Amino acid sequence: MSTAVEIANIIQARGGIVPNYYYDLLNHVIKILAGRMYYRNSDIISDELDVTVAAAGAYGELPDDFWGLISEPYIEGYTWMLKPSTGKALEISYVSSGQPSYYRVKNANIYIYPSTSAEIVIKGDYFAKPATITEPEGVLPYNEQFDIAIIEGIFMLIQGKSLLEIEYYLNTTVDLYLSKRDKKSPVQLPGGINWGEQ
Image (cartoon, rainbow, N blue to C red):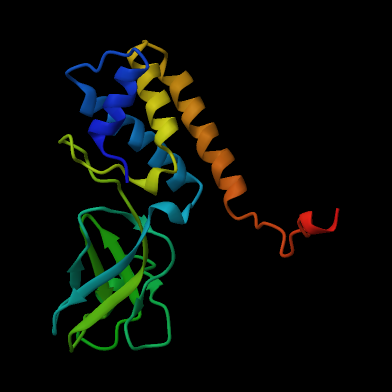
C-alpha cells in the first residue's frame, strides 16, 4: 500500500518540486479517479452497507463515506429487497410501524417505510468516497492500481496543465484499466521447453 510520502518522494526523484499544497493536489487527483469509477459503476470503490435501525425507528444513519447505493438494499435475515419509495404519498400512507418494504436515501440517512417495530439491520452495497489524505503516512486508495496515474495527474497539475486535459488523462486511464480488469488469462498454458530432451 502506497503512502502520501512515497508518492511525494517519487515526484521529487523525477525532478518535481512538491508544493505546500501537495495534499490538495493528491486528493483532487484521487477524487477525479473515484468520480470516473463511480460513473462507470466500478466495484473498486464499493463497500458493504450495514445500517442499524432501532426498534420503532424510521431511519438509520449512513456511513460517512456513503456516495450512493449500488443496488437495492435488503433487511438482514429476509429474502426480499427494499424498493425505492415512489414519493410522499406512499410515505405518509404508513401511519403505524410494520414490516419495511420501501426506502429513501435523504441527506445522511436511509429512511424506511413503514417504520420498523423491531431493530433491523439494512444491508447492501454502496459506493464509498475515498478518504481525504492529510498526513505523510496516509494510505492511498485502490491498492496501488492507480499510483502511476496519481503521480502523473499531480505532475500535470504542478505543470499547470488544463483541468480538462488532466481529467481526460485520468478518465482514460480508469476506462482502460476497467476494460481489462475482468479479462481472464487462458485456462491452460502451453507446455514449457523440456531442456532434458535436446
